[in-house]
Image (tube, one colour):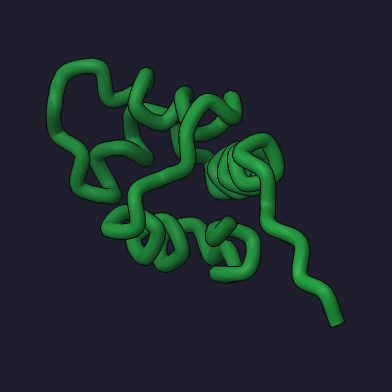
Length: 75
């Protein structure tokens, strides 16, 4: 069985869908996963738009807070 890597867009869509379903704003999610720097909403936006993969240290927090399966978060 061949495994296809998830695209940045697929991972971003999964994050956005789960974030909206849970009622978090982008800034709220950034703070919840431990990102406390200015521009917290832009930090999440770059993942949701497919410009970047979330760093591995944030994947676990996103998984726990939003209830997304690891399979949807790891390329």
